[in-house]
Image (cartoon, rainbow, N blue to C red; front, side, top):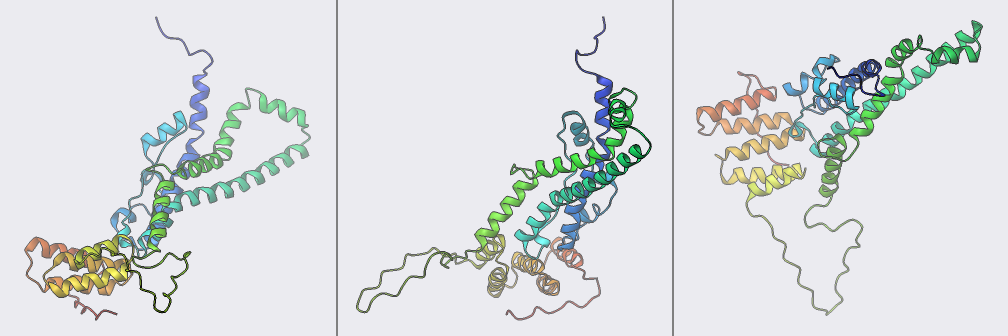
Length: 321
């Protein structure tokens, strides 16, 4: 005994309408992920993981499972673009811009496509009226079974493209882990926190007035300060205080020139500041120290990633500012 169709469900119509979302999904997923890759590349992430996504080929951006999920339950996903915030001059700000790039691209495509649809609708209505069709005749034809396949086909390349892009933009703006909205919110919080450096008063509080003559000064509260320059440098780097990180890394190297991690951290900080020559010089200084073959090859690979070629002179590390 076979199973009949579910009551009230026209499977053929459902499949046809789901397939009608395919053009919109290919456009929406492609422009969303391409925008992430373009902004990341423009801000300094030139890694292979970013370069391979700089294409309009939807096969590089579409997740087939996410595509199928959207066509069935109207919620799906694409292949996320990986990027390296360490390559950015301003890690938090630039990561925020990368995070909102996809949503921005979907909104722009939706708005532009909406205008295109409006123009096409006006042209079609004008042609039908000039051809002698009445409003009633047009409505009856649109509601007929003969018109349904044509309506679905036209919608697939007009209204559905607009709808899918706006849905993708709205869904990705939700502040949920894994979505662009959450990532942008976290980077925004880090930027706000980075505005207030240790030991500085908050900008909305008035500065303390000096004590009156003869009045005993109140003892200042003890503020724990890290004495290890490596720990200081890593803390500064995590919070985006890159100039302070450079100073702390160089202090660590002044204490121990063979500190490979300090050289790497210094190079990374200079790279994030956009000073690639200084980054190469920091790594080159590490080569002057005794290194095992694996560490030496790792340093050389990092220098090549910065644009240095074997045989090029290694620039000298400039004095600190």
